[in-house]
Image (cartoon, rainbow, N blue to C red):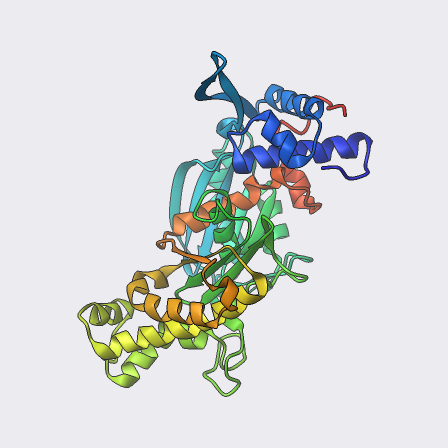
Length: 405
C-alpha cells in the first residue's frame, strides 16, 4: 500500500488494507502482513495495535514453538459485529445472522409474497423483528440477494422472476429498518460467500455459475467481485444463443437459460417422451438415475451447451476455478460429462488444464450468508458507496485510536 497519499486518508487506507488481509487470510503474522501490503513493520504494528484495542482483531498462537515461544498470529474477532443476510426468492425468503468471521449465529425462513401491493413493507415486517433483536455487538447492516439486475448507480432492482421493475429496494428498506442495507444479484451474493468462506477462498480469480429456475453467473477477479459499469456483470442466463430460439422472460428470444434452466430441460424431456406431461424436475432426475437414455441425453446436451459458454468466459477471463451451484446441481452427475467435455474442448489449449471445477451443493442458507457477506466485507474495502460508509461507521474499529505513519 504505497500510494502517494498522506495524513488521515493514508491511515484509513492502511487500516482497511490490514483489516481486509486479516479478514481474508488470517490467522496471519505481522511480518506476512507487512510483506503482502508493502508496509513498514512499524506501520503494521501501529495499525494492528489500534485494531486490537478496538476489539476487532486478536492475537492467536499457531502452536509452532520458535525459540521457545509460539509464533504470534492475528485473526478477526468474530463476535465484534454481525450482519443479517437474506436470499429473496419467489414465495419465500431465507435469512441468516452471522458474525464478522462468517459464523452463522441463527437462521430463519418465511413465506414471502413478492407480488403484494407493497412488497417492501411486507419484507420490512418480516425482517424488523430480527433487526430489533440484534442488540450488542453492533449490527452492521442487512444484505439482500435478489434474482435480478441491481443497478449499481441507483440501487434500483429489475427482477422479472419476482415481477419487480425499477424498485428502490435498498433506499426504501434502509429507511424502514433504520439500518444500512446492501442489495445485489443473488448470484453475486453466493460468490461473496464462496470468496470469504467457501470453495472460492483459495482463489483470487474465479467464476460462479448457478443452475436452476434460471442461469446465473458472477465474476471474481483480483479478489474483487466485478459488477461492471451498470451492475449487470454475470448475467449469464441472458447471453444470446439463438435469436429465433424460445422466448425468454426478459423479453428476448433464445437466451442461454431458455435452453438449460429447469423448465427448459423439462420441456425438452416431455417433447422427447422421457417424462410425462405432468412431470417435474425430480421426475426427470429420477428417469436419468434409472438410466433412461433420453433423459440422460437431455442433461448431456444441456451440460454441453453450458460448458461451451463457460469455456468462452474462461478463455477471456482466465479464472483459476469455475464453481457451480444452485438447485440444478441436484442433477450434476448427469450434466457433468457434457459440461466438462465442452469446457475443456472449448478453452484456449494452454489454459484448459489449469482451471479447476468445483460443485457446491445447493443450500439457500449459503446464498443468505453471502448476502450477509456483502455487509461483513464492507469494513474490508474502500468502497465509497454511502451505505458502505454507514456500515464502516458502525464498526467500533473505525472510530478507534489514530494510527500514525
